[in-house]
Length: 340
Ligand SMILES: [Zn+2]
Image 1 (cartoon, rainbow, N blue to C red):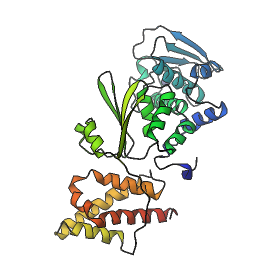
Image 2 (image 1 turned 90 degrees about the vertical axis):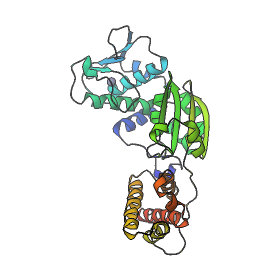
Image 3 (image 1 turned 60 degrees about the horizontal axis):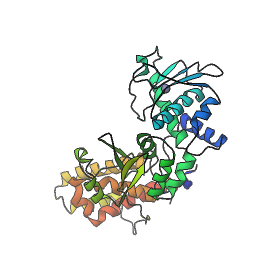
Image 4 (image 1 turned 180 degrees about the vertical axis):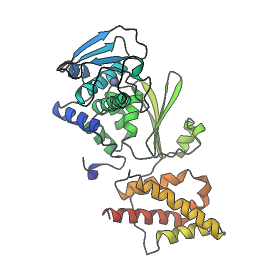
């Protein structure tokens, strides 16, 4: 997919072998959610559902180097968990660089939990195999070619209805979705009394971390919000970023001069002015080099969003020259990339 095909809300997401492979399989078998993962495994391996005593281990794959490896899955897993587990095992089988006998718990988390070494003799990089197999499962069960057009439509209801069709758990769904979105999206839901919150990378929540669960505050700060059922959970979502058309700054004032003017209006001390200038320039430079934006509109939305929650700069941000400064910075950024 080319950058030009990405919509305003879309981020390109991490590029990695697990993703390319999952996409290739989706294309080859023309798969669409909900994907029949049991059949995919049975086409290339022996699949057994077993009762077993290994706590914390949902599945095990043996003989990855053999023509038809054996996959053992704990009987009685919740269907959504079983779906992710099977896709995770399928990932071990299809990713030819995975090896050994692997004990798995395919939780939807970037943090490895319950090292498989508890059950089996393992190689040192097995944790990375585990994480990679779980990411593969997300790419396969929520394919790029299925979810991206929904995100491009910039209709959150359609995105969440689509996610719901994939049949994965809410955790797995939002772990996947968050990486496909520009900064400024928050999703929250409750699992067994515990509040879960997922944000797109680079999102600045309007209040302190301790209050992140305060949905009323999120609602006040959001441009748009709503509630939809995804994977049997009631999910509240918030969009904190406004994506507006980008207009270059008229005239020729430099970015630095515009920022100096906004700062000087509120801070008389020259030394402090310089300190603030360096700090703000650092934040802007860091945000733009994080390379999430593909268009000037996205870059401007990211920068405005970044400063929304900065109480210490509130008076400077409110000065009209500050927004001109951000636009000038975006203009320079876009010109460097041949986008303007
Ligand atoms: Zn595994």
